[in-house]
Each structure stands twice: as structure tokens, then as C-alpha cells.
Image (cartoon, rainbow, N blue to C red):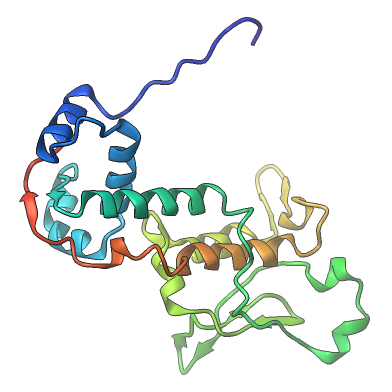
Length: 221
């Protein structure tokens, strides 16, 4: 890029900053705190239920609630968790049920993925278990881990869909997720880390709690 310099541009407007400082009577509020607050509010189940109809028709309105700094802190922690998901510890609550005969298979083949899927019991999908491959099954997936969503589906389901062996019919190009890293456990550990993201540390609790009394429920940023 030569001598070109990058310039940071905030998506939080100066008007929004002035408004928040006035509402919360704190001249030291900064734009990053407003960003974390919005991120946390948008993840709140109560917010999604309260504004469900509005969100289908228009851009979201962000209420100003009394517990502003509680949501800021929760948003800060959630953002760090989601941006650094490859660094978090794989969720330890998931078992790895490995078929006995597979123990002699090289690790590269043992953890090789063709297409992960959920088992079906009486025609119903059971999301508490993931069939990783022919040899490995992953039971004990916590249901609350599916609350971490990317668009209309959970991050877990997104990983299951993306991490599968495919050959494009038109071009013949092969997409093999097993080649994405030198570590044979890369995909299974990535899946467990995504579960950690969805399950979340116990101290990221504010978005799951009530919004509390709104100072200006319908006021958008």
C-alpha cells in the first residue's frame, strides 16, 4: 500500500454521542461504548420480541435503557468473544464418541469431514447430537448454544453447512474443508469453539436479562 495511511471512521455519529451523553448525564461516554451497547441490545431476546414487528419493516430503533453501562460491559465481552472465536477454548462439555475400530485410523482420516448432520428420531431432528463423520459422534450439545445466530440460522448450523466436501458441477472446483488447516482437529475444535461462543461465559448475562425501564423506548440513534 506504499505510504497510504488508513483512517478510522466511526459509524456512531456525533449527534448520537451528544444524545447519549445528555441522556445519561455523563460527558465521558465515548463512541466505542455506544457501539458495545448497541451490539448488546440487538442480542437481547426481550428486545427482539418487543420490536419483532418493527424489525420486519424498518431499521431497528435502539431504546435508551437505565442499565446502559451494564449493557456496554456485556457488549464488550460478547464482541471480544465473537471476534476471537478461534482463540477461545473449545467447549469441554461435548463428548467425542469414537467407534472402537477407528482407533487404528490415522488422525487425518479419523477427523476427516465429508458432511456433518443431525440425527433424526422418528422424523424429528435432534440438535443435541451431531454426527461428525462415520467414526465420531458428538453428543451433549447444549440447546442454548444455538442462540448465537448468523442471520436466520445458528452459527453451529452455519459451520455444519459450510464445512462439507463439495465439488462444483460447473467448474469442477473442489471445496475440501479438511485442507483449511494442518491440524486434523481443526474442524471439530472450531465447532466446539462456536459452541463456546453460543453458550457464552456465565458473566455475559445482561443481554439475557430484562431491558429494564426504558428512558426513550422509541428513540432511534
